[in-house]
Length: 241
Image (cartoon, rainbow, N blue to C red; front, side):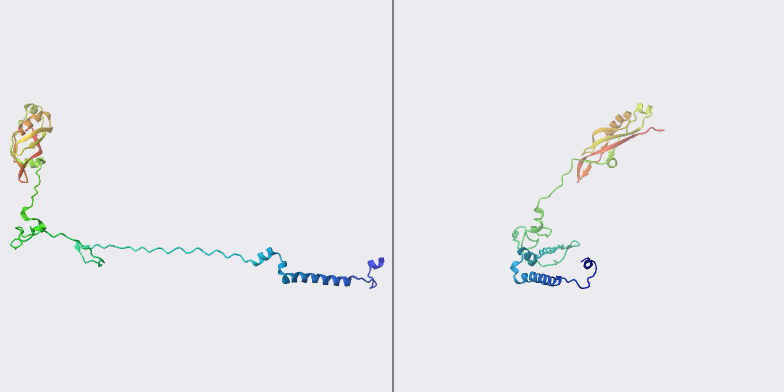
């Protein structure tokens, strides 16, 4: 026995495993063939969940959103003036509709031309219905202002009578000189009114007032009518030598 387990027996030991191996192989192949054929012959035997997962197709993807609408074209209408170089020009398009405007008939009185049979004309030959009733219309006359202001230079040109001022002895002894500026109103008759001192040496002011009070001017005419004027008068005092 020891010899048979450790060394080759030389074909003297016989085994019975060969037929069993063949039978086992046939059984295994038959089982595999059966597992393959059962689903094909009886599909109801398969699990429903597995069949649904295998047979149900995935839902299609959602359709893409619709494209945005195209932008609306804006038509710009240019209105061209019918005036060119302050002159009327022909219209570029003809209107589709014409609106009738009812006008009142002009009165026949005051319509006509001088020398015609229609009458109502004016002496200058202009139709009275358009430019008025000739010389019969009211005349507008501008109001003359009560008082105007003039410069000292203009007042000198209007001067008719001038009295020279008397140099005060006290001012001459004190060697005081200068210009006394007076504000005065020349009346419609040319006399001096509202005479007052604006500036100047105090020693010379009274002498200037006494002299200018007697001055006379030519009336200032505005629209051929005399008006009062407001002006300034300069009285100059100088020391001789």
